[in-house]
Amino acid sequence: MNRIVSRIFPAISLSILVLGVSLACTQQATTNTDSRPLGTIEDILSLQERDDLNVVFILIDTLRADRLSSYGYARETSPRLDALAESGVRFNQHLSQSSWTKCSMASMWTGLYPNRSGVLRSRHALPETAFMPAEIFEEAGYRTTGIYRNGWVAPNFGFAQGFEIYMTPTPPKALVTQLAEDPAAIPQSDGDAIRAATGFLRSHSKDPFFLYLHLLDVHQYGSDDDSAVFGTTYSDIYDNAILWTDTLIGHLIDELEARGIRDRTLIVVGSDHGEAFGEHGKDGHAYDVYGEVTEVPFILSLPFRLKQGIVVDSPSENVDVWPTVLDLVGLSPLEDPDGESLLPAVEAAANGAPSPNDGTLRFAQLDHTWAALEGEPDPIVSVTEERWRMIYQGDENPLELFDKEADPAEATNVAEVHPEVASALHEKVKAYLGRDSAPWPEEAVSIDMDDMDLNQLRALGYGVQ
Image (cartoon, rainbow, N blue to C red; front, side):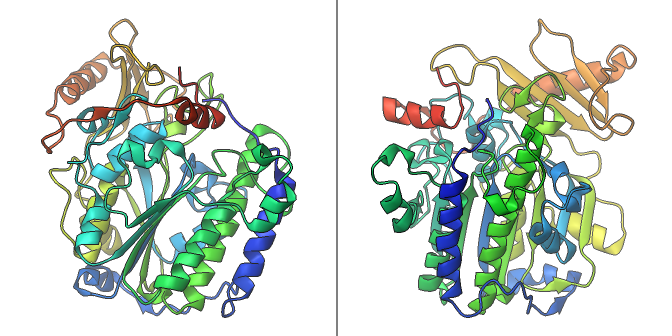
């Protein structure tokens, strides 16, 4: 996946200007206040007893955890997200299931590892029989809306199931008018998604709702002039995009405050994968499953403030996200997920007790040939157990083993130094690849994609063949 650096800063600036005017029309939005009451771990455990909760799920495409200040980054790229973590729950060792959006999101939404979801190639889609979190919210009486900007989670791939409204946002009329002479130049930005989300809140703030926002400007390295403060290298521009997105998320949080519903809204922040900057010889993502493209943030911001945020240091992964959230709000679980609720780990962290998740195996997967429309499977799989991470790239390639405690950047392959560890983890990868398929009757389906579908995905930088 090649990087795309946004060349539409002036247009994006106009988009955020229109967004700001829209927000200024609401009751004191953008005040950056926090009126939530203080809460405790007991309040977290009793959330499932409440019947007034909303859930906002913010997916920041291509966001690696170590570029957020709350995860130890030296630059202040994420003040609003950091504030969520400081008064909520932050998972410190969180892993995505792939470095490619569609595969990763299929695992996140279903709670199934990629080998069970079956969504491994460009044509693969979740079947109608797949059971999705939005369907659970819908059955429980929530208004469900998804606003997405990445074509890999479009309805034709099965991701709209359970959503009353599932849409891509449109640019503001002022921007369309300005660029009407060249319709192809009309850009989208995450500002459009936030505008659409605030419009949803104006209509549905009195109803229990589940709102999904899939933001893309970090993926596209897009920002506005005011947030471009970190320099001009690719890495700098990526950080600028994070700050821009963080600012937009702040507008949404302020809108929840202005409408008086922040204290009954659970905000879930996550990412589908990270981004590489040459750490293992590649830039971008969707090439491999090293840490820079699979270690992502996971933050829970509660309807109340914790005096001191909870940091869960035990391992977690994206297949755990929806088992955790559904458990928190007291809704039905997913069908036979590989993931599990992290609520016991949150309680243990709050009380300074050993985590029940220590030692849990975690997997990530990418098919070497995911972009080809035809071909045989060729999996890359990582398995993480305690301090060790092993990466399998096919029988013709040597195993790679990393000691994450001594070598968090995965710079030194120690498979020859610890052959017994590499061999044991290799056996676990074989067992993983041989596991049963999804719990629903129909397996992942292959769909036909027309030239428009393919061109839209290529415009994101994906080399779909």
